[in-house]
Length: 203
Picture 1: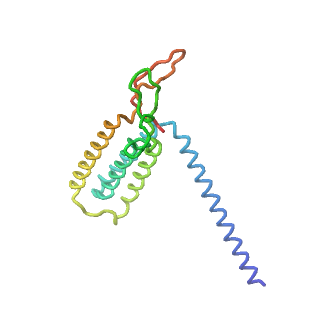
Picture 2: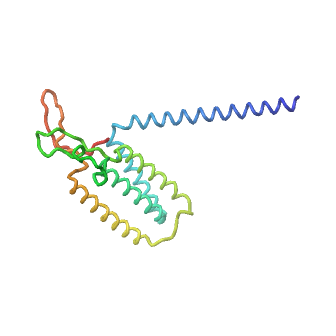
Picture 3: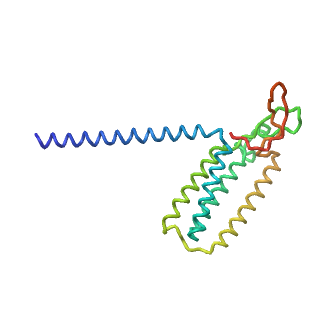
């Protein structure tokens, strides 16, 4: 009886520990999501924070003189997300419907239609920030410090960047869209004015 009772007590302790861990994980995830939601309107502050993280990573890599494969992977990932950020939500190359809904107005009398991105600004920022943090953590593990001639990686990344951006610009010209908002109407007091805003739309 004592052995059985002791075994049941141990099972109850394990269940209680597992439940407490689950509750703690849920609470942490909820608070983390709350902080992300609160940071959504602070576009400039978020991108400054990413710049700080990237600067710290560059300092780390410069200090250890290595981890070029990690840096190359981070650069390819950022380039891929950047192209998705510049792309429309519906690709006119494969969409059967007309592309009028995503193009920006060409005359002042036309209705203002914001550009809808395939990758919203917040998700773009969040993804590359996580990637930079992960790359920074990887620099503390020697297994990822693969010896390589880094100028070749840099040259290949530059070539890939130029080729990808040329293709993206041709796509913009062909389908007559730009991933920025111009002529956005703003209300200042009693008057309504049209300003030329080159800031990206956070969709």
